[in-house]
Image 1 (cartoon, rainbow, N blue to C red):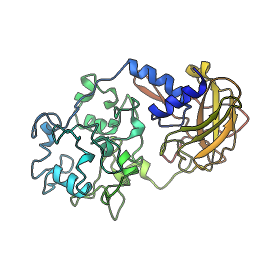
Image 2: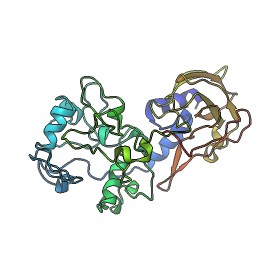
Image 3: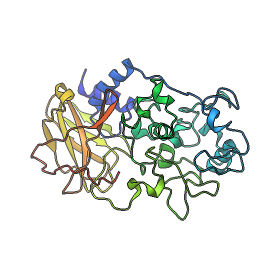
Length: 351
């Protein structure tokens, strides 16, 4: 298979947090397809009023809903607040075109300008995803919130290892859920800031100033360190928009890409290695100074390569992304090459 075919298939099928070369995505995708994960609750309730999430939280149409977090009554149902206030009547955001019930947690018809993520669009983060092309893993923070509240079933049943905080570190509190990051069309009340800052408290719909615990660590909103205004080093490239190979000349090795720029970044570097050395992240070279516009062109030697876009601020570089082995998520190793001598520093990363 040629390098270009490898690249193109990946950019169409794999949503990755960090811009790891398209060939890397294709290899990992094959492994994930062969070892699918079972989902826990695939829908909010088993009837219109009971079962699954409704067992503890009550029916979605039960009026009034009372929050289990702060004991406050919403003076209306979850359904009406979500439909009328948050979504401006855009029912397809949560429902499938097949009908109103059942309501799936991880899929929907997709509202106007919104991807078909359903509940996961606001209650999960794509950066936590574990299976490309699905919303699996999106809700890691929500599951860990439940785990810390003593509801450990998601992990105990063997469905979601990421429910246990010792097994996974979700994206930080300030990383927006997909619908926050891209609220589509005609959703003026859609929250956009997961840190829920005053005085508007965008995650507030019923009078409380308390929003969601997006990463499930027990610290809400501005009380979470990730929402602090003190920042230092760049985050990951590719978080806000995934890496796409936009052009490739096989004869010359010229490649053009687009990617999401990282917070606090002033520049980016391409780190690359031969595909045969992918399992050990055997980097072979660097392309320095590709800019920070979200698009770049560079040249690689003849052969098949994986590559990573890594952000820097001129004195420190950010994350190379993470890998998951045995349900444990760890940072990918950095490149110690000397062509672009910028040391990695993740101590005060802004994402």
